[in-house]
Image (cartoon, rainbow, N blue to C red; front, side, top):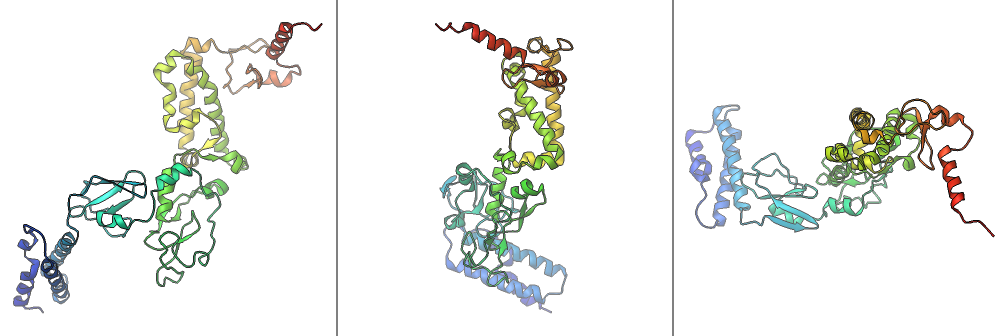
Length: 396
């Protein structure tokens, strides 16, 4: 085994603790060369020391410190600006010292203790300060702002030959055999990427949800991962146009659609009710603002929550709170109810009641059985038509 003399000589090359103190002034090439020499000797020493011995473990720790020190010398922390704008990325200088981050450009670990790094406030792209001038991919948030729509074909592959056997993003040569670099397919775009642009991250793909009601995460490239994350809560999916048959197979969708339609019928009551405005009842849907604007647009997050059952529970609870305010708690809202003009019997009716029907022309509310069984026109529409005729000047 290694002699004590050789071990001590190697430690003197740079493994002693005092070597880690940063000298005053600028670094010269000899500092880096000295560290490289010490790292090389340290590697040899680890291989020749008794396996699992305390000396070997200590030497491994020292090797890690040496490498970190070398990295610090190569990438000294300077007075970096707090904000940098590159290719529509708005990079903010990070203060976190976590070592669990990975640079999205070079795929290496970001050593927060000794390296300066930035995060894009738009798409959360992370990278070393030294890698920022090498970035070629624009901020994904700009794509979300200018093109808020999904690829709705399932894995639209065009073939690696159509990509000229190059990564769809950085144009690095790739092949299915892994020579020179492994080609990895993105299930969202259908294109192939290198291992630097595709880390085998997984995400739920919108096209598979809409066409197959399938929520199994699939492997996607880094840019698709960020784009899907930023688009997750955007209501850009009009299911009735994209795949209307989905409502025939997914009962939960029919239930959610009915709840949304009821909420839209309740909205006018709240907009004219002082108590409801003060209680800010509609703000219970602030995370899904589109639910109080229409009943046909969905976000991918909506569909995920429908599949899991979470949305049905929360929306039913909100529906109950809204109905209670209108029908029980607020006298002003109660006064805006309807009496069925066809049978003139029963309780006060509201358009969102399950046993009612609403006239599409004048919005009068009737018992469903009465409205469907009556062959005459809506009484309210008839009165309005008669009044309009009476107001017209006679023809001479």
